[in-house]
Length: 626
Ligand SMILES: *[C@@H]1O[C@H](CO)[C@@H](O)[C@H](O)[C@H]1NC(C)=O
Ligand SMILES: *[C@@H]1O[C@H](CO)[C@@H](O)[C@H](O)[C@H]1NC(C)=O
Ligand SMILES: *[C@@H]1O[C@H](CO)[C@@H](O)[C@H](O)[C@H]1NC(C)=O
Ligand SMILES: *[C@@H]1O[C@H](CO)[C@@H](O)[C@H](O)[C@H]1NC(C)=O
Ligand SMILES: *[C@@H]1O[C@H](CO)[C@@H](O)[C@H](O)[C@H]1NC(C)=O
Ligand SMILES: *[C@@H]1O[C@H](CO)[C@@H](O)[C@H](O)[C@H]1NC(C)=O
Ligand SMILES: *[C@@H]1O[C@H](CO)[C@@H](O)[C@H](O)[C@H]1NC(C)=O
Image (cartoon, rainbow, N blue to C red; front, side, top):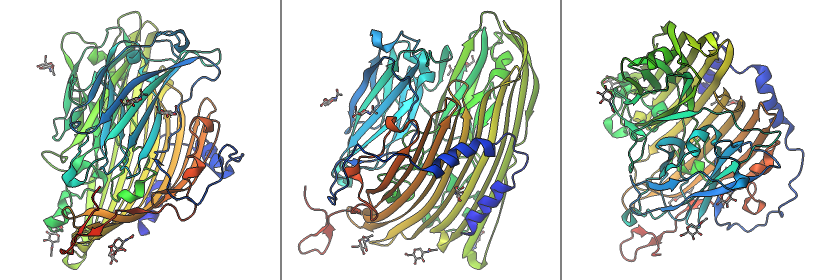
């Protein structure tokens, strides 16, 4: 457990990081967790010893949207669709029209908009990535559970008030949930999706949300294919953009996730050390460091050092059912202020582009295939033409250092990657408000330690990303993102290639983030997660099909916001069953714990086990016919 100490040490002594979450800011989160719930759940019956609970309630912990109490609202069914045969690369596309009923509130003047994405799936399926777009602008990046034979259901709620400009106009609603049904691989789980939107009329205490008037997609705009950019090289993906000449403020919101050879980017091996392992061990190169960049006319404007989202099939699938890792069903997004770049973007003498690109540690290209990246520009216009000039453009070099070593014969190999980046961009803008100074600063630190044994089949990886992003306008802070994302993964695939082999892992991951987004309420999140599990495999059909396994996951989650709302949760699952789930805080009722009839108690559920019968005469194992 040497690695955990390394991580703690690193956290304790990273000086020079500006305005990280202060002890005062973290206190309410830790205090809320320490206090525990102050009421017993009276609404549900006591658990029984019945261990067949279907459908299994599966979830990613999230804080529910904050919406007005006591006002009127209306609900709209946006999509009801089954993603099954033929849904790979074939998003559902339906027309969206803003609701006009009186109880919804006036179009564009809503207090809040929340989405409810509920998915039901029964059978066998891998985790699949999903994205929802409105008017070709990504508004939600999600993924799926690996369902159970008796049915699995998961619901995620998301505040989408900051997309009011999109919801105010008719447009295409697109949902991609590329799924594969293939009986020869035993994949039969379709995803039955119900997506609803709830529009809340403003009330005296909860006025119309302050939002941006223009949202411009940074996406491929395809009418029929997934709209995110698929990035596998160093060129990234560019969008030509023309912002109104009266723009006074602009931000880019970014969605990004690694896929395929980049799914576990944070565990990828530096190229300098890939040669220490036989190719058969399947280690992926180009190192573990990734930076998602926003460039304007080819000039760096800001960066994202992303949180590592582990999908439900990630590393050891039995770890993530029925409690997923943080972000699996609602991935975090990131903000970059491009207000200091307005003098460039508003210059009408040429066309302008915004490029989203991913920087890794390899060469030509620096990443493997591939990343899915998209975004949108959120901007506010004033009443007169904005003019100005960039007064400071200081982009610190991306200072990546890779070191490492090995014992005799590469029996043990270790690597260390560190990186740091400082960005400071300032401009003087003249708008209807007069002349003002705007700035965007980032101060980011990264460290990754890895150790390998058994030719790379056993790996320890510990990574911490810490940073602070701040945007100011007229001396007022308009964006702050202060975060620490430590993750530590031990994985053991020593028996992976054996017939009837096995693999397992132990993972710890935290997400601590104080986010003041450019629109919406400032919020703090602290999530701690620990998961441990193992999978056994058989040889039918073909090698490495999971037949049984164990998995235990514990998570504590705390949310507080500037409105005074809070949400705390302490949950644990084991072997496909809920061990405990306790929720408290002011938002408890908006996202209550799983029903008591789903709680199996200390030992967890019956576990993940596929029924196998011996095929007469051959000695081979095959599943029972349906
Ligand atoms: C969704 O579609 C299914 C199948 O057509 C139907 O049974 C179900 O009632 C629909 N749900 C809603 C909310 O409309
Ligand atoms: C979310 O939608 C599902 C399916 O439409 C529904 O059963 C569930 O009650 C909704 N949850 C909330 C909190 O609105
Ligand atoms: C963007 O503008 C440039 C220069 O006018 C042009 O060459 C390019 O084709 C445009 N790209 C797209 C995607 O429209
Ligand atoms: C040990 O790893 C290095 C690369 O780090 C490689 O060049 C060398 O050939 C390896 N030695 C053995 C014995 O595999
Ligand atoms: C997560 O936070 C807890 C408590 O602060 C700490 O004990 C644990 O080591 C952290 N996990 C990681 C991976 O750093
Ligand atoms: C990895 O798993 C194998 C097989 O269970 C076991 O023999 C070995 O000790 C494990 N390695 C470590 C470092 O835990
Ligand atoms: C999984 O099945 C294999 C083969 O039957 C058995 O050896 C192993 O103990 C099982 N593991 C679990 C966790 O049930």
